Image 1: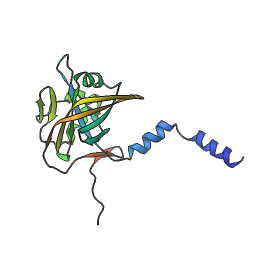
Image 2: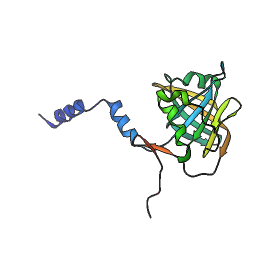
Image 3: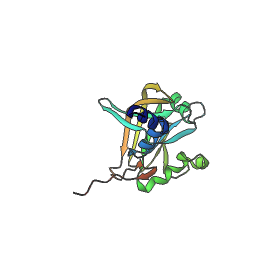
Amino acid sequence: MNDAQAAANRMLEQPALDARLKQVLRHLPAPVGVVTSFDPESGDPVGLAMSAIMPVSLEPCSMAIAVNRSGSSHDALVRSGEFCINLLDSERHGHMEPFARPEARALRFTQPEWQRRGHVWFIEGAPANIFCHIRERVSYGTHDLLIGDVDELVATGGEDILGWANGRLGRLAPLAA
């Protein structure tokens, strides 16, 4: 067997590309939050736990989220045209579970910190609530990338913003000097 054949055999023995990428991304630190919106027909709040959050630009101020089109909140979120990114701190990490686990769904929007700005719910006292209206929608693969212009930002100034890495909530900390 030559080197090219050996390399080809190793490639065939590896898990599929999507499984390998998912494993790598599992270890990539990312911000985490609860993204909320509402169903414009019923007025009911909707939301999802998410780490696919990123800033896009400061001129205009904008954020992007990537939402799976098969997710239960996707259609209402897109139809409403609005969303709020609620960044969490260690004191409010319990707000994540009802949105991350289907069996805890009944506990969504039940904690006393949940408030409304217009029709969109947000977590009062969270390190940041970033209110956006959808400016662009780009469909790719299984997801829609929703780019929202920031309408309002409520920030406490807290620096204890949680992230997601290695399949768990955590904090980023500077390397010791």
